[in-house]
Length: 350
Image 1 (tube, rainbow, N blue to C red):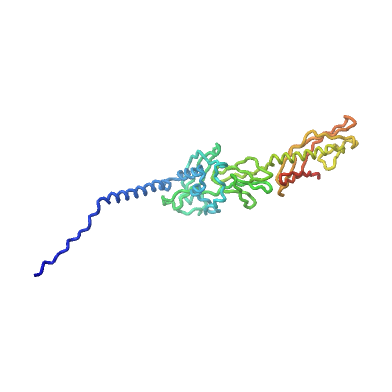
Image 2 (cartoon, rainbow, N blue to C red):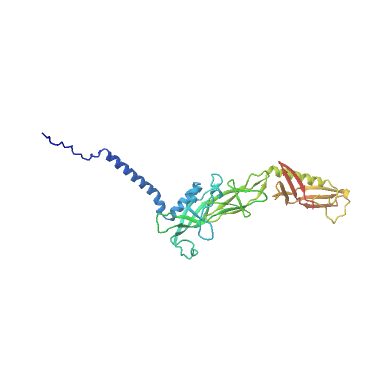
């Protein structure tokens, strides 16, 4: 007797675990919140106007963040609108000591421009570039400055492209005598076509010469605006201990000359007036004052040029009577060889 075929139980899809739903909802909400947070952080900088870019640019300078500031710029590299960023190694450092950033930045006017504007050379920018001219004021070391610059936004119709500061690259240009190397904030300047220079962003920089066994320089600073930097002629100053050593040798040289009884001592920087007839062995010299010396860097390493900035005074007298007295002004010049801290002065008697 055949039994009735057995039927397998009907299979139904498993009910989703209701405990997983809150997890999925929470994860989705967290992802949405993250995307929203990123958008809220990034988009205002992209969608805002040129003023926000100016604020961020000068904020980067105040934070001494060279990379951040350059990230907001387009540096013009040629006579056309082509841009690029010079190597970071060519920039003056925004160091804590030696650099004073602009402060109290205020935008006074923003003028929207078009590539065909008469103030812009034809073809200078692509036709889809948004352009704005920004006028602003800021302070550097308490000095209030007025400045202006262009800001550009490539693909001007695309609101998600941010504005950037557009300008030629400002530079600090330095000159120094002889073999001295100028510095900006203790960073050596680069020699380019016979000039010393470093690229720089707006602010005030301390400039001087690199450590040298003979010379230092007087304190100086260079001011950089948005589009141009200062040119500074550094005045080399002989180190005090060497000044004293050279002055001592010059004094000894003059004193030795003063022991002569000649009206025109050989190899000396002074002589009696030619209008008097005096027997040489009856003439005496007296130093009334020594000259004030000036020093300059020579093109020859280790050689110092010595000259007179204020003349000295000698008096010649007739030893037989007081009827003759000749006041003589004189200068001293020559060179000083400096080696291992030792000084050897050689007068110029030509």
